[in-house]
Image (cartoon, rainbow, N blue to C red; front, side, top):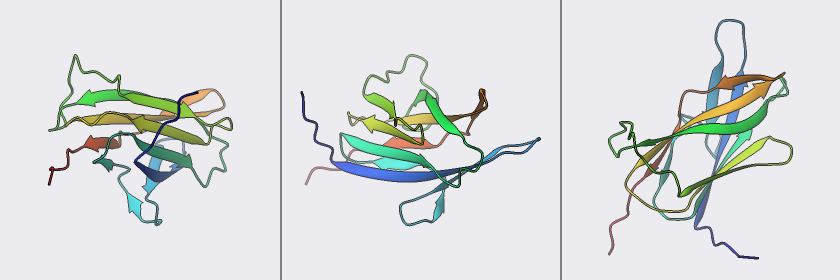
Length: 135
């Protein structure tokens, strides 16, 4: 069994409000402040955990829709996502994205949750890779 060393873990709490006309996703950082759900990665092998909270609708995570983006945020048609791994906990309440490589790019993540067999897709928070300058 291979052991992995993760350099950093970031957690984002996700609250989803469902209604007939519009569904909304809210994101909260590790100190409870509302955020856009974006994460800046400056080290390889970073874990990003998205956790469903305030889940009175019994939502569960499904695998997200991932989009490779340039460092400016535009879609890359032939982009490579081989350095991204996604896993979902057994209870489907936590989704973990592992960003193994460090390239100067962004990854658009449309979170997908399921309610009674219906998929609900979020606007895309981003994982932004920024290379730290070497000292």
